[in-house]
Length: 284
Image: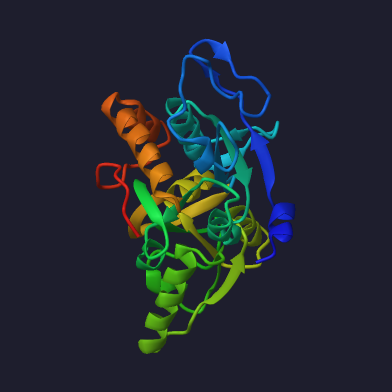
């Protein structure tokens, strides 16, 4: 993996936060109020005094950039709250899903805050905290002449989804099922993020798009696409880590959020159901 290539793809978006009534400074290492002691040692962090999180701001309402370039969404709010409780400054690095795990392994960021699906393959190499209950949706054009009301309606159609993700895996498994049953396979087009997944549908390059439920609902609510199928292949979405101490500290912050109602309030605000479990770290 060429880290210079990854660096060119990543755009750091710094977010300033207020802690205990004292403004955070812009100086490296002076990220927290003096009466708040960081819960994670600087030696474990990518940048001293900062919780650096990889995210993909292409998934409204989960994570997206507004017209002013400011990051918004559930995952951004969750990340800010975790950092505040750890007495650290939050920093979000916008990157593609393909770079997230290699970047985590290479020390480019402290965690992946992009709702990575919990899979057996990922659990072999990552520590994960499941917190979102996610499922796959199928979107179509509003006035599509190729109706999709059940999975078998996708046979022989073209579909876009994100490369290397859970969605791609399930669409390929569905193709295998179609093949075994003598149905025509889908033509799967892969893209780096959900923004381009939906752009392909918008441009008429594909008949349907596979994404996650909250994203598909957001696009339908905007009047852009129809939410044809929902709730497919549900599985938890997570925060992901390499370092156990960092993972346990974040887990502690999330459990405190759960205890005082902050966690459930944020999830409800964005219409996302919590994943089963108590926000503990799943070991690799």
